[in-house]
Image (cartoon, rainbow, N blue to C red; front, top):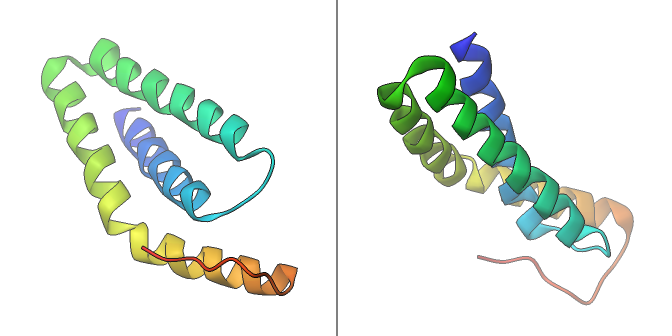
Length: 92
């Protein structure tokens, strides 16, 4: 059960970073939903498995966000190139 929660944390962290690189009118709404899901998963880790697992979940979410940043950048670049030319550039 806890591994499923850790996997969800990694996916949510990746989607949060990916959303940071994309543009759109719903960007703030998506960010709010992903933030609520992230907080719910972190609270779930504390409640289901204790404080050690909860602290590991917090560290895992930060590590996942940092390590998936280059992949999210490439995916966002391809998505924006696929959607058509734009005057905005994606960067760090």
